[in-house]
Length: 232
Figure 1: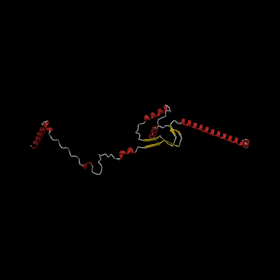
Figure 2: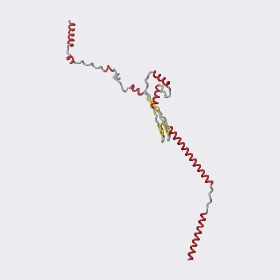
Figure 3: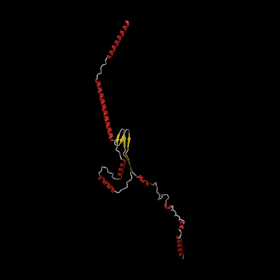
């Protein structure tokens, strides 16, 4: 009888729960949330970091930046002196950097424009059949500038013709100056030889004789004037 009574009571409780209206079920209190797990269940050692936490200062995040190789190529032109004309070729730093990166990666460089079409087709087909692989990161720095130490220097691309013209003009100027100097020396030598060959004439006494005659004439005039005064 007790078991039958218990089953009847449970059945009545279920029927009452099903027969409740929705308004009655809305105001029923929600069951409380389960308690959070204890700290000991997450980390047994309080000194050790939590396994789910991420450390932003971990060295593993910086190995990519530190391991990036750097290559620096100094292709600069240095000029020392004064009055120089230097023609340097204009360098393409981007093309040089790409060639270096291609060689370091193990790829074949791009063919030159003068190569035949058949020779360029075979490497292209071989590169298409090869599986693509990730390339490492490389920093390439190429210095293609010019450092000039001095005064009156002309440095730049395409100055070969200007340098040749100025060299020819300077050579002609030096030749003209040398010819002019040689001509002046020859003229000086000729004048010196002519002066050595000419005989110096003796000193003439015509001036003293003329002066003596003038004195005698002046004395005769004075005597004539005195004689005229006496007669008067």
